[in-house]
Length: 128
Image 1 (cartoon, rainbow, N blue to C red):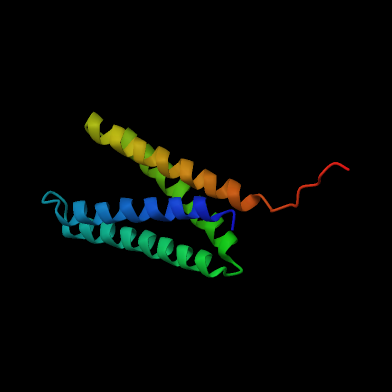
Image 2: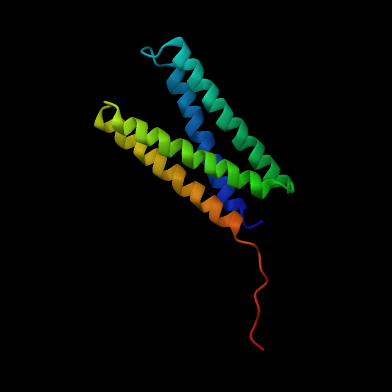
């Protein structure tokens, strides 16, 4: 399946990113209990979606391409909003730069997925 490399990259990146987020949220002594719960729930939602998408893709589920596109779009929108929110708030420059890089990587992978699922495998014609 031609979309697998892009989907695998986005799912792998998502897994890495959100596992780190859970670790950071739980260990943040400055965060409120409700803030930690929201962070963990958000992370678990992304982790569950990435796992389900990877499983559907590996199994060749009929809706896997559409699910990949939806997941990519949600990831892109989430990180564009998150990056904009971080930029307009008073965060240290290091925090802002790190999250901008995370957003750029996620958006890039999401665009790769969208491009791969929109490309249909069309047999190449050979000149006669």
